[in-house]
Length: 376
Ligand SMILES: Cc1ncc(COP(=O)(O)O)c(C=O)c1O
Image 1 (tube, rainbow, N blue to C red):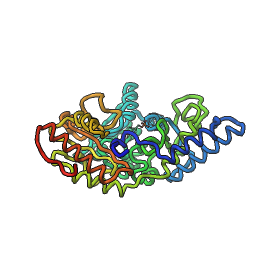
Image 2: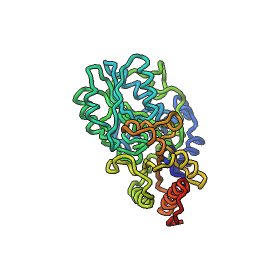
Image 3: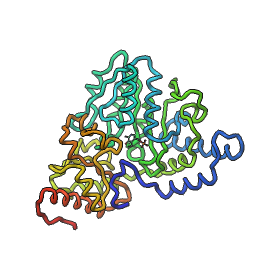
Image 4: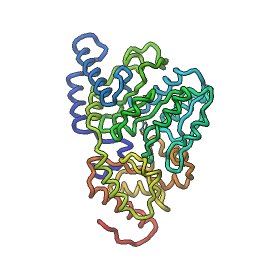
């Protein structure tokens, strides 16, 4: 684990989550819709999980639906929001995760008009552009709580005030926020949000969508019975139980903050942090590496036993630019030299110093410079 620094892409399951998964798979294997005892036992575990998650988030359990993860939750959430309003215009930040961008592109093909709002130099949604984009036809605004590439925490409070003033619905992608920052306040005012289990030590292929229960919307799957008609398919009860166990033991940001500070101090001047550090979620840091391609850094890092990335896993490799940097008005050249490091509470001070030394060495080797590395 000590050499894995790509926790924004996915995390290893915690022992407790693994234990919960096996126990639930063995003992609560029934279909939650079956009326016999085996089914009702699984159903009770599912509803207990829903109540527990609702308690952690401070929301009503009846608004929570279990899904296959963040991607599906974003898709279903956005479709629900669009069906709940009366117009045909939507606004999103240009740095949204691909799962939001794809559903929006589909809506655009179906005739919706769309405004993509840029980020400021600091990586925050440009509120002035957002307000200017609002029209009489605007139905929904979608802004992620934490950016997956550079970790900036978006000002959802202000965005919510704007939405309230203009009577708009607000969807937010909480995938990189949940378990890392306190999301309860934002959960209390957004109309829908998405969660994913595998970013916080839970299993892959499990997530949740919240839709404010007072909202009237049209589920996209007709005549569905599971998950109150919002999401079809037999519910993954072991996955859900395991997700809730992982969610119950959230990350310790304080420890990670020390690690991140140590790591950044150890880096050479060739590395530049992207975004406003005062508004960043601690576990993620995006860096520009002067003169060295990000892909090279990742490959060389991997050769030395370190796993990190050139940005959000779902976007890397699609085209030259990273949407987050693009949204900040940065160039294709900047995207080419971008890397993302994401930390885990199990990392130690030694781990992050060695990682920084490794990154420094890769830069030195690339430029042919001969420098004695500290800490090696
Ligand atoms: C911000 C954000 N939203 C959504 C997702 C998709 O989540 P999942 O992998 O559970 O579908 C990710 C995962 O990369 C993400 O970082």
